[in-house]
Image (cartoon, rainbow, N blue to C red; front, side, top):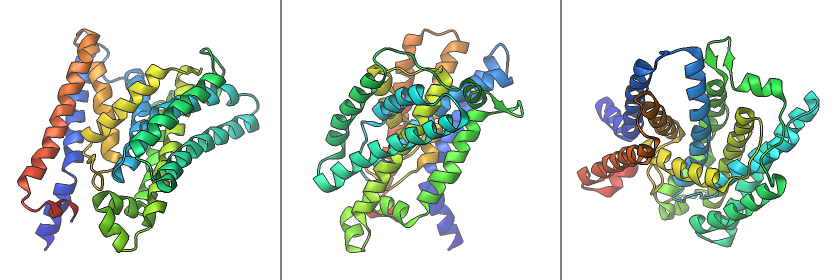
Length: 328
């Protein structure tokens, strides 16, 4: 029985294990070929870039687990960045209030997405494509031209290190995992998201609160995108209503989710794998730099890595005679 449990756990975590192994290999190549080696500034710069995509990828993971896609995460990311650049400054109480407002704005955007999907009975991909345009419009209203301000001491702290060793952005990411993802993953609502993505009809017949689970997934996705937007403000010290940034992060978040082993059909995977998927995508940029390769090669390498991840996921399906075994 123990052997069977171990085999099941290994099979379910195969995508995550592969993502971790690929990231470690790529990061080792990067550090080994970097002129400065593994120094605190090198690690901090790499972490700051990777954590932004990792947070957006975590946001994307939640709707994907329910069997949907959120095409608005990038625009919520941009909108909250523009909002943070306008209100996260001044006295400490004003900064604290601004942070709360930014996070609530992200959660509200996600709640609106979920409410339309759940109560309007619309497809998530169409709903979030439309709401994403609305959120981008709000970003333009907030920040017609790039600029803004942010509390400098806080921004410096969030983009440097803790004890001059560990990048603060990684500490923030760990806190998000421990405070938001893990409690949600093991909650009734979180398990409901997996059940909905695995087999919605069976979940309904089993008494799972489908609507509540799906609404919670989209709301939490908006919150995580808001955290990412806040972090972007700390990194850039400004806000910018950029459609290209929003679109790029949305597409890369989907790629990170797939690379991390989460099934686009829903019901399998998790945010930890998406984090490492994001790290892999960001490390590709760094490898191009240290090997002095043209930046135009980046889409090629990202496409190869993504195709490999999708192929490995498909190979698992082909090996299984009974498709129901995927959800055991």
